[in-house]
Image (cartoon, rainbow, N blue to C red; front, side, top):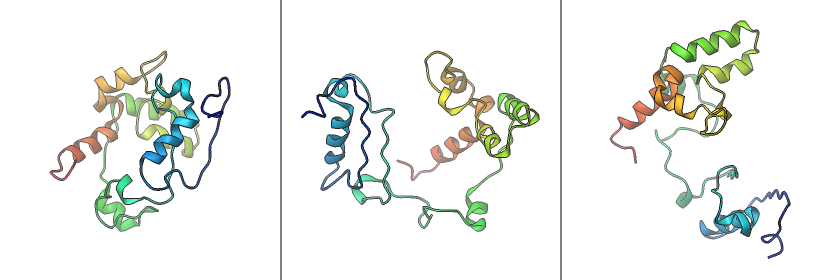
Length: 156
């Protein structure tokens, strides 16, 4: 009760067992970390959960069957990955970052979207409306994936 009623504190919780018996256990733990004051006034966005294993009732089935939770082999990459050409804003931003001398590691961020991931919101300096209005121009790879998923009769 003391932790749940705490105010003006930053609380970080680490546990190896957020769910003991049922999915509701994780919800209870998150509500304690968020505090009683935030429980009803804010969403769960910004809170992180990470599981090293996937209890069957909590996680969807991974398709295609047999896909590992690790590095993909070259054969798997050839089977699953497709070429998507960058153009428009996505290409312009990628080229500008490359020409500025950005490291290859950091440059990889810009081959997926023309905006920095943390700017995808509706707030000040947000890019959400622009990206959603023109996904082919702003994030052609994500659009390609979304179309492939939506075209599958087995999707949820």
